[in-house]
Image (spheres, helix red, strand yellow):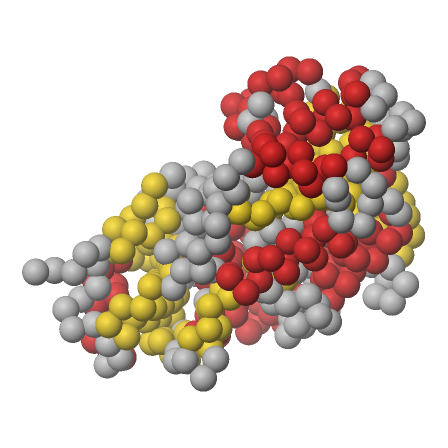
Length: 430
């Protein structure tokens, strides 16, 4: 009798995979965290008793305007839970509805419009009554120039709508991030609503190649340190931080001063997210965490980088990602074309001398990490033709068969399977 299939997160559902006979499966998941029984009550509690600040009702008093940052469609943040209650508190405290804005922190991604924006906001009342703007990192006039960070001299230009608001609140999801350590909090500001020069500076090779710029690490991480400097230069900023479980249910929500409230959420989820293992594997099977993170190949690379600590040198990393929206931006496509044409070493050499990274080439640079360690095999139903070639990795049509080939080639029967992809960080801890 064949073993029960393991369900990988894939698109809006799951992809069943079966391990070959004689193999030993190691399914790696986050430690279970208790779901919040009443998310609305939990939100009300943190708004009334925040971390490192006064309650929202007091913060909003005597303010003339407010701007709330929300992540773009690539993050499954439960905006429907907190946007309207926060806005209603602001209105009750005296901020005119017309002076409250929501700014979509797109970074250098495309804008979210139409049905996609409605899905992102999650609340028809908010969509109808509140001004919603997509950040445009390429619009010079839409940014305020705050100068340079003191040590690394990163130019700091931030969206004017946010920088000039009386009350500034970032919202987001706290999850492992393969460069900045953890997402959410300060990251929603930069790169979220930063100018392209700011983004391209701290996505340059001198940051990306730093060994401390990795998932779940904030200590000495140059990206995190620059983000903190940018927050300090901005001044007074607050944040709502959320943590979700594998079912996308809320397990934690914090509110307060942006750095302290973000750190509190990180402290809550860190131990549950990082999973220690006493061995490395010649076959690692993972996902891009399903929708919405696996909408593009661009985002898929996060899932390739996160499990590298447990991939044995020369092993095979098998990743499933729907790529329902295709490849990614034209700039990312150009970077991948250069990678395929030049090869990894020559491609990296073109990056290291530059002060500013080209837009979206940093994701291609991150793909070099798994390519240096072993073979990357991709299963996707969303890419065709030239897009498949430009991935620069091995394309497979059958995950089960790819696992069997890898086990047979390596002689190692142990297979690591990470159903939730980059939302789980396995660590080699002998």
